[in-house]
Image (cartoon, rainbow, N blue to C red; front, side):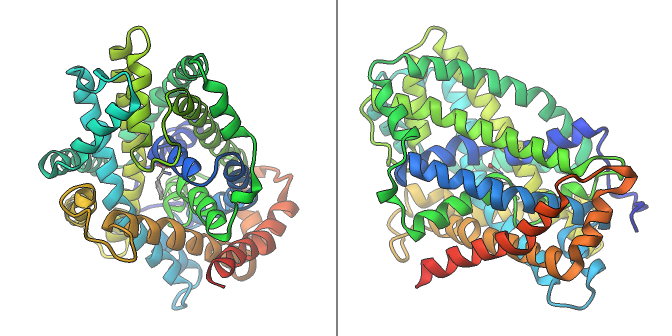
Length: 450
Ligand code: PFF
């Protein structure tokens, strides 16, 4: 079982290739677009602290569990649970993951489209005309309200993801990530320096780094938990699927630590770019999904070579979004290839088009459909909320229970220690997976409802 023979599946070229590809899945719009805006909406410092606890106490152990299940079975999420526990309800975790992949990519493609549009608009300099983030925000608001433009760019984004996934996993994904990650890091450092030297920046640093616990409610904790899952690509089998293309020689524990650290570093760095600028420029931190698209263009227009920086930044962000988008698509595609027997091409084309169609109402949620609301939420918000705050934490919790109690820590450990890799913190991990992770997620759900 552990030596894959299915020649429709690919393999990572090297260990670093795998770490980069998994980081490519983790690092994306979740770090650069979502993390700052939900931190802004949920009170700053205290939210960041709770987010970090969720990352290390809940996210990290689950990531290792997903990698282990994937490498053990060499299958997609549905197939993996079927192989280990045939004809049981556990397989439902896999199906839930496939559904989550569908839902997330549908709105992810919309925001991915926005980043592609901002590359084009940086070339024409139209995004850089505004010194004030209020004007830049207004420009962004007009853009996302324009149905034709939004849908065209969303189609372009989906098309790019599909083109890469059709070629199979390692070629495109690994190579793209190799250049992307270090460059993104460097450009964020440069932007951080610019942001911190704006007059009034320190107010933003205070908002971001000094916790005010009066802002914390059960809903806020659930959002932090959901964001931890979203940002680390957990709870829907994306990391399981990536692990399934991994050979036994690799060290799963160190790969997990690298991916979690890279992802967290990038998110924290983005916060240090956004919040100083938000306060220096007199913008509202709770502005919502348009935050990054209003603040950054104003930062770019206040610095030398702003146009070039803007182009480079949005190109990197688009690549980061694509490397995450392909992992979402890959989960659904791998299911149809392995379980339903479709060819890769048929799976990518069919699934990609359906997800694109499902994403259109999300894309229109900021314009023609902005008044179509259910419980005060737009279509976009509903899909995001169901997938990120419910399906992912639930999927993660069930995965932890499965590995901790059903499949068993001992078997997982055996897989992790293949090829004599010593798993030094096995006991701690077992404790986290069996007790801390499931209890934490259940507690957050219960606190939210009662
Ligand atoms: N982790 C990605 C991001 O932060 O942008 C989004 C994502 C990818 C979520 C893959 C879930 C997933 F399975």
